[in-house]
Image 1 (spheres, rainbow, N blue to C red):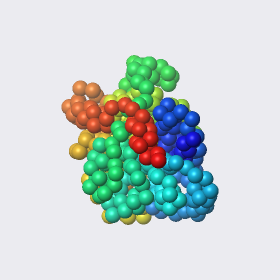
Image 2 (cartoon, rainbow, N blue to C red):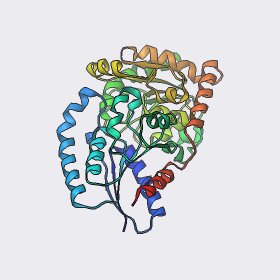
Image 3 (cartoon, helix red, strand yellow):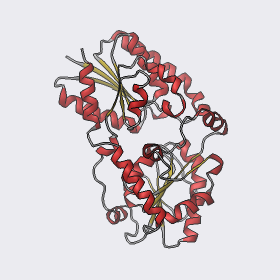
Image 4 (cartoon, rainbow, N blue to C red):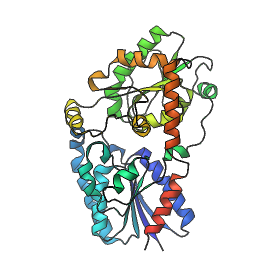
Length: 354
């Protein structure tokens, strides 16, 4: 019987791991799977923010090392979450277990020299089109499998989505996407709320909704609707968005939502990051397109007035700025590949089983 261990770091990775598990069961009848997920309490963004999580990571890693030694797995699949999974990959390799890493660490952004930490990985399945060449040039067996966001079901129309959210289906809608982690929302909410107020003052006809997460707080939302359900409905409903950087920008691109991009981290994290960054942008839509599709407002530039001024023209579909951005978003959608990422990962996994 084939035995595979799958580990995922946070809710989005859990979903990607589950899709791979389903694809593996179709491909390998009688497969025995063991999985570790739901580690969102360990997950943070930033150098300073990560310090407090180090002891918990090492406790978890010690348990997993023992599991690798005690149990004979045919394959270990690690999904995202590099702070922990790079160490888990080394532990699996030391135990003689092949490793497939799905959703690569973003070493192309700030740590090309860290690619050597992928030495224990037998196969890297990457989800951004430029990653395959980057890692292969540095000696890592990498394969572009397409982005898993392309496998999501087709969203409802904007009118249907607005009705589902309790919004006026006829009014233009601004979506706010401050993040899925409580830490992100805490840093962003006041700026997003003030930017929304500025948009509302300039365009009283626009309704505003935030894609909320139950773990975070959204004090004094005023006229902003806080939606705690499926964020895909908010993307589907929005004419334009204010988005934190990261995968959120790709979700907006797939939903054809013109956007401004922003992010704030601890000042020390920012000081370190901007000295390590090897790329001209942080927004994934811009990196995938190869040029600035959506404007970025980071750290000190992440001001409410700048965000409001940037997003206001995007609410007008006829504005040349909006048309140009939508052309870029189409390019991004094309470059993210065809649906079927989980099936391609399962195919790579089957090739590693001895």
